[in-house]
Length: 424
Image 1 (spheres, rainbow, N blue to C red):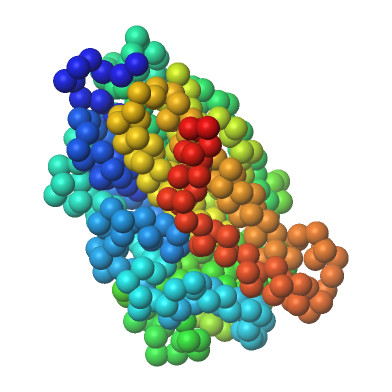
Image 2 (cartoon, rainbow, N blue to C red):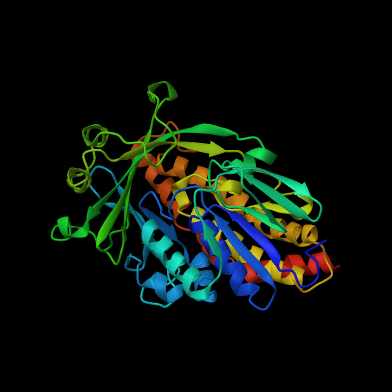
């Protein structure tokens, strides 16, 4: 059951990060001729992104273009020179395998390595220009409960709001998900350092054709890629670390470490890596990487509550696919809601279609991200116990085509296919 006649269908998006704002824009785009009202509730005092670079594959870039954000995103992206990642030996920088992007980086629809804050600014500007949603701050969701044909949200400041659909976009530590499904993080066995370096510091001596390079070693790897029109190099360094040596390290963007320790961890890497580390902040971001078991249900309360993005399928960062999966979620939710509002079907039915389209693919992305990390650090089955040089041909074979299934999906076709099944 939906709203009363002439009342708008109200959507409450919990979380105003990249996933939440993209979802607001997708809903507005797909339902622009429907009677809807969107509110976004962000827990922070302002809309901002903590963190640095994020990669958007061509699968998600297509969707950004389809809702009119493509040009703005191209204007903030880095240029990887047609390369997804050039995987290299840690000790001398020689090529292991260079995986090309599925599209040339001069094409209109291309991979988008971007700064999170600049991405959020693109989304905020579009929300404002299009009047897509009402934005709220300092709103921390405490609980959601059914109240007749609506869901009632109670915030920590004791205010309430009602909506016909509540969308949980509140990230890896989602308070909305916690109400319906237990949190189940497990330490993945790796920590990560993250930082930014101006490209001007390195461009004179950079030895490779692309700034998108990952140096692979047993039990650690060092990855860089360009953002902000190649003005900035984004850096992520991964180290396998026993749990007993974590020393209270948290799963948090605000947690920091010491550059001196990072330099020690990678002292046996070739000089390009060591020089890059030398330009990083003295206290780079440092956090543990937790893994999570797949969540088998994203829809609750008779379709009045749905999850998406990290709230539904947080994944390890080793394929750079997490943000793209959130974009796919928001896009399909927009299509499903439009079809719901123009049919006699229930919200529960169409929310179920959203889950049917998205859940299997997102779970595969979770699983293969986990596997990718094991391949990079030569901990996967068939690599354990082999010496470094014996691993490299096997690593090459496992990496050269592993992203094709992510990039090649035609998400509109997948939706139409599941929609046809539903009609049978």
